[in-house]
Length: 419
Image 1 (cartoon, rainbow, N blue to C red):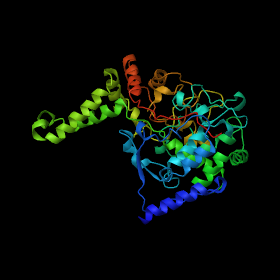
Image 2 (image 1 turned 90 degrees about the vertical axis):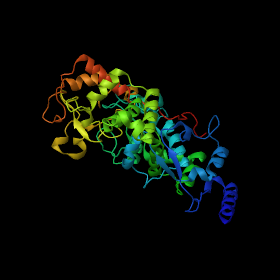
Image 3 (image 1 turned 180 degrees about the vertical axis):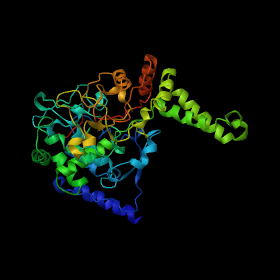
Image 4 (image 1 turned 30 degrees about the horizontal axis):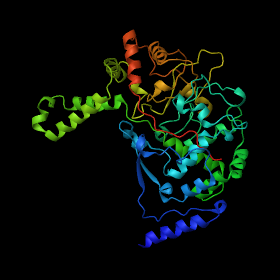
């Protein structure tokens, strides 16, 4: 009863407190965290504040007054990706809440973060382009381009250092880097902070969510919280993989399982139904066998639940040029890191061409053919890259398998921003 009264008093306080100085007080410590399944359409986590048109001061007042929006979220990963639960990054230092995620969503799509109001995070990591960009290189202010393809911004919750070369130690650091990059958003952190402070809707959110004034560090925290919510749902591969591993484990018992262990058999039947409802083609199934085989062994680098080892490898890409991009070497100074770049995830990769760090491969088939040739020889070529001698059919099968690693993207509101 006392707890309910304290909630009521706090709600009245919030309603009467001037918006410019409003500071939300967190619920008592014994309030249970909300558990959310990421990669699920049902959570509504990335759909923003309901309504249409620019977000008004009145709307943000109502949003920020709701306790639920400030409750720390305990996240669960979907089938397949949930095997990477131990690799979840950043939540201890930067807990996720609905209010923080919503602020990050607004910042992610707001071109006002750029110097000329033309570029947002979404420009190079677009919802409509697989959270990447279909251009060979990222395009920034004044049409400027860099020399690297835009990496994807989903499933970052299980990824540590960011960018192709891992120069950003966290998603928070990555989020604010492009703002001050002269060929990306071309702005300064100081100008962005000034702009956000001048916007009453943004200013309210920062002061309420972070109990502090606007800062570039909190900009990074908000965008990172939003990006950690962008998680891909289960794919045909995930459903098939569960069945394949079960059948391998019970290979000698499968024929008698219905009679010997009815509960386990029922679980097996449920797995089969889900896999049949989300089928992999025969070609993709052959590709699955190749991908994880000792001979081809794509899984040597595309390993783990997110199909990425989060490490850096020299594939020979771009190393034939007169002045090759040395990738990770520029960060570490280690000779072995010359020409090495971070392994991207295979999940939903079909949506984000072109491929490789320099966008040199236009299709997934070209990517497989690159590996089939053994990459480009150079002194730092990864020992995992070798000629595969695949047939044309096997190349196609690997492509079909990669397509079968496609799950749903979460629903995201892209248009509603502060007035």
